[in-house]
Image 1 (cartoon, each protein chain N blue to C red):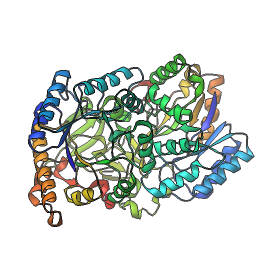
Image 2 (image 1 turned 90 degrees about the vertical axis):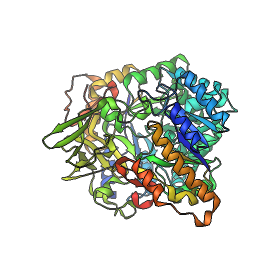
Image 3 (image 1 turned 45 degrees about the horizontal axis):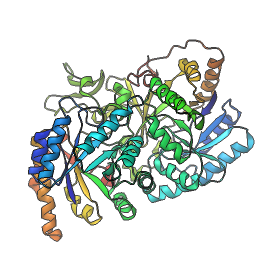
Image 4 (image 1 turned 135 degrees about the vertical axis):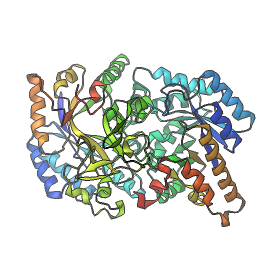
Length: 331
Length: 293
C-alpha cells in the first residue's frame, strides 16, 4: 500500500520523501489545482526540480490538475497536462472530463488517476471512467463508509486510493458550491474553499468573531480554540439551537483502519495537506511510515500507538481527529 | 422557449406529492421532472411509484415527463434502483451522477445531464454528447457569461443543434451533498436511525448565522441555498442567448405561480425587485451566489 504525501513546495516535498513517502503529489502555480493558494505550488523550474528529487530516490510524482477547466480557458488545463508530462510525472490526477479526454488521447501511456474532485462513489461511475479514459486509479471521496469502500474494492475494475489523514471535507468533493454561494469562489472554479481573502477576524464584546465575506461563521469565548473559518465548520443556529450544524473543526485519521484497507486491496493511502507546512508533512509522513511498516512486519499484532495518535492530533484542526464517514455512526 | 418544473428535492408524504403533481398536470409547464434525487431512504414513493406517477402524467397531458435520478449513490442497492429507473422503457431520464450516464449509454438511450454533473466546458460537453446527452443543465454555480461562452463555442463547432440547454432559474439551489444527514444531526440522531425525519420539514430546516442571517437550508444529506434563486429579470437574456428551457424548481406550490410569472415576463418584460433577504441571483452575475446583483 503506497503512502502518498502532499507537498505545497520543494522543502515539503523533500521532507515527505526523506521521511518515507512512496509518492508525492503536487500542483502547478495556477488555478488548475484544488489548492490554489498564494505562495504555494510549483512553477516550471520548481516542477522539474521536484521530479528530479523524487525520481533520483526511486519514488513517484503525481501532479494534480484537478479543478474544472474554465469555458474560456481550456488551453490552460491542457498546458498544465503538457507541462506535467514534460517533466516526467508518473501520474496525472484529473477531475474534468474534457481534460481527462485530452490526457487519454495525447498521452495514453501516462497514468491517469481520477481525482477525488470527480466524486466517483460507485461501480458504474468507475466503469464510466475506465471505459472512456482507461484510467489507472480512482481516488474515492470521503463520503463512503468502510463497508462501502470494501464492497467497491471487491468489484472495481480500477485500483482504488483513499484519503487516510488530514482536513476533513464532509461534502462529496467536486459537488460542493457552498464556498461560491458565500464568496463567489469555489474549489471547482478557482481551486480554493473559503478563500483567505474573504476571511475577517474581529474582537467584539461578544467574543472573537470569524467572518467569511461578512457572514458570521463562528464566535469564540475566551479560552476557546479559534480555527480557520472554513464555512462548513462554523457554529450556526437551527431553530434556536446553536451548534456545529454541519461539522466540527476536526481532521480525518484512519491509522486504525490500516489492516482493513490493506486487506481489501486499497493501493494507496493519501495524506491531505498541500497547503500545510513542511513540518506538518514531515511529522505525518514519519508517523504513517512507522504505522505502515509496523503493520507490514507483523500484521497480526498491529496496534495503533498512543504516541502516533498524539502526534497526529497535534497537527489536526481543533486538535481532534475522527474516522469521518468511514465510521457509520459519524454519518 | 419552454418551461419546466424541476424535481422536488424535499421529502413529502405520498399524498402531498400526488396532490402536487395533480396541480402540475394543470400547470403551464411544458416539461415535468419527477423522482427522488437526494436520499434513497426516502420511500414514500418507491422507484415503481415514481414511474407509475410519471406514466400517468404522460398519459393525461401532452407535457414531456422526465424521471430524475439520485445524485450521490454509494451502495450496490442504490445502483440496482437506478438501473430500474433508467431502463424504464418509455420515459426520458435525467442523470445526476456519472453512474446514470454510464447506464444510459449501455442502454443506448438519450438522457438529460442534470445540474449535478460537472460539465464546465465544451470538451466535457462533447464527451457527454458522445454518451447520448440530449439536454444539458450547467452546474448552478456558473454564470451567464460562462454559459454564453460555451453556447457560442458550440455554435462555432456546429454542434449547437445536438443538444438542448436548460437553466435552473428559480428556487432553492442544490449546493452540496454529504455522507452525513444534517437533518438527522439537527435532531441529534445518526443517519442509520434518522426516523425519516426529513418528512417533518417540507421546506427543509433553515440554518442561520448567529446574527440571524439565513445561510443554508438543511435537506437531509443535501445542503441548499437559504435564499431562492430568481432569474426572472434575466428571462429575456436567456431567450436571446439561445437557452431552450427555463427550469422552475418544485419547492412548493409557489412553483406554479412562478411558472406563470416567468412566462409572462417573456411576453412583457418588466423589472422585478428582488428581496435580498429571501432571494438571490449572484451565481448568474459571477458574484457571491447568495447576493443580488
